[in-house]
Length: 445
Ligand SMILES: Nc1ncnc2c1ncn2[C@@H]1O[C@H](COP(=O)(O)OP(=O)(O)O)[C@@H](O)[C@H]1O
Ligand SMILES: CC(=O)OP(=O)(O)O
Ligand SMILES: [Mg+2]
Image 1 (cartoon, helix red, strand yellow):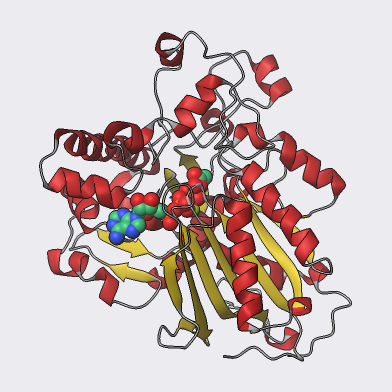
Image 2 (cartoon, protein in one colour):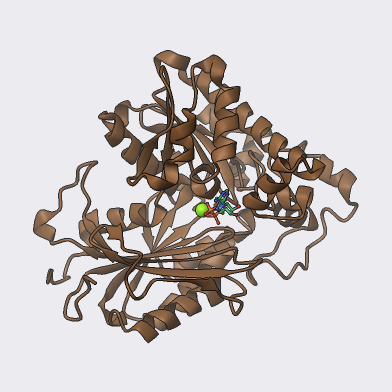
């Protein structure tokens, strides 16, 4: 264990996903050694923890890191069911209790807590949490019903448990801030659109920023010259066309419900469908599964929590869907084929928009499903053969056994990659590189 009780400069990074809470603790390296280059790694990982399947069968895992790698044989490795966890706030409380019981660090050593906030609205730079920014993020909760409210409950818990630490919000939407106007705009009355902020924002931006840098490094190119089609496939799934280091287009929209379907989300549908689904669409929902500070209509509640592969198959876990598909169960076959079909919509679109084989450097899979589903990667790549993408079966099946951030699974001519995304590291890195967050901090490392 590399933590020291006397040291300072610890950064806690919290990533509230729709089905998970991922937590990493880092030490900022000595300020004298920090370079702000795309390759700089200004933090050292100390420990990592995650709570997955929060709203179904929660599991808690905790590992102590050895330098930059996780050492699974250390005494504090845990991976167990955690039935006491009900939501993100209780997940975070469970983590803090475990940290305390292991006495690995003094909580006072944590200087900054980085929070992944999915919807940042007009904020596109990290911002310290104060009353004003807290309320701004709170007002956006209805535009990310599975995320912002849950993240705010964790911010509150942090302020209480770590009163000396500074809470900083990092936004998923920031990476997409400079999407061209005609791509982020909707074909509606523009006066209304501007007044109410009705446009495409895009999400998973911390993940895309991390992937861009990791893949560019792998390819030996500057990020600003790297063009990728990236699939971030998890409980929330999205695609992004990254052109010369910038988000050109992405599949999620005003909220994370649009684009690809997810574990409990519908993805893009005809906007009038919901009025034919229920005559109560516009009424306020009283659904208890959403965070207490989220207030949405029945339509939004249905499309966010009662759709996706959970609605199609009864399970929100892609592993279960894959089993059903492999067994030929009609519901599993429908969910699997539907997901593949929708993914192809975006690959084809971004391929065309970004100039095809001459320009696109790679197709990248990431997120809980993209990083782990051998079957999904194989079938998506097979469907993209006409674009020059192909997967090497042995490499595709062997991904779990290969270390590193980026794994090659393709065959010539086009690159197909798996990137193990790390939103926590993306936030901690930005935090460590931002001088204003460290002014007045003694560098004791
Ligand atoms: N071995 C696996 N094969 C396929 N899918 C997996 C596997 N392990 C986890 N998953 C899927 O990944 C999803 C979680 O994705 P992740 O990106 O970690 O979550 P979140 O969207 O909450 O951030 C789970 O719901 C599960 O369906
Ligand atoms: C934006 C989003 O859907 O995030 P996640 O996949 O982490 O739930
Ligand atoms: Mg996620």
